[in-house]
Length: 385
Image 1 (spheres, rainbow, N blue to C red):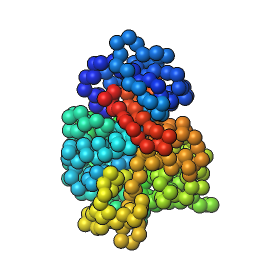
Image 2 (image 1 turned 90 degrees about the vertical axis):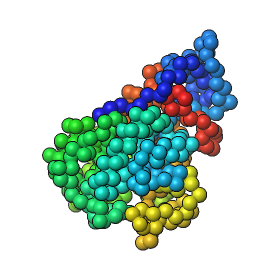
Image 3 (image 1 turned 45 degrees about the horizontal axis):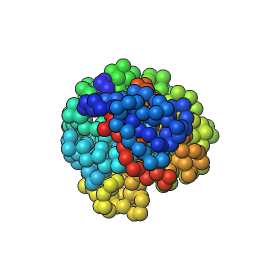
Image 4 (image 1 turned 120 degrees about the vertical axis):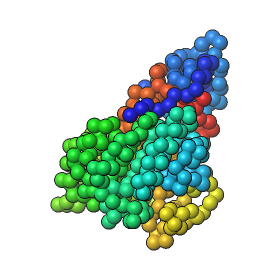
């Protein structure tokens, strides 16, 4: 699997000054972040001679947010048109809300659509579309009993002849969400050996089935608590397996609708901010005024900040990563530094990019976001630009 595309050559040295900065070692208000090319070159007390100085005006500088589950934005749904242009619109839309790295996400669909999505993401990375880190293929290898808004007619078991397709991305990371009962442990192991990141979701699996998948390389859980077998007294289910294992990661949607705040806090207490990561599960309505869109011919209506199908099933979210950080602070009762870690360093580590992305430190890619006191995004940089 390839690595995220590097920004085009930005040779000038830039120095970001006069900001409250969340550096890798903690908060600083007396530092200067020096950017050379697409990387952070140094953290210094003063700008180096000849650098282009950028005054942050006392605002807060954070590592850019990384969202591993983005179905759409700007009026576009990735499934509808899996093309470079759709990816560009989605990435540009979410960048306005602090997302500097994302995985365009396909929900359950026919395999030719999956193939087109994989090709489009590879092409987008090759074309240098800012912020694209790979693809998230969420289904169709799910359990129809836990399908949520996914179309039942698209769902099917994973067969060996499909594995080559899931392993075929030429650039970026590939994340596959599957139901462990819809695949075999051997199939999970083969995907992982090929560099695919495997996550469990939309599943009614027994605890033991999930454990078998973890033992064969599964490392993630998609929107924990939602669309998965619950934790019961004598049946720990998928939730129990996710909360018990100290090494696996879990995505969580902190929009106030997918989870009760107490449930969110339980997940944080069990997993910690190093393994629990914020995701949006965003739909086309983010960055758009539209109130109705279609998923496989079914109308999805926006009701305030909720998206609902005709049967009142939640259909993704209108959440942004900046909104997720604010939601985590309010519902999770954590500080900005903890919420930001869950939006940056933790998803970077989950993707195997923890040495390149998710922190403001020398040698890391200069993916940064500037916010005001209300957590509204003022500016972002992807690869220093």
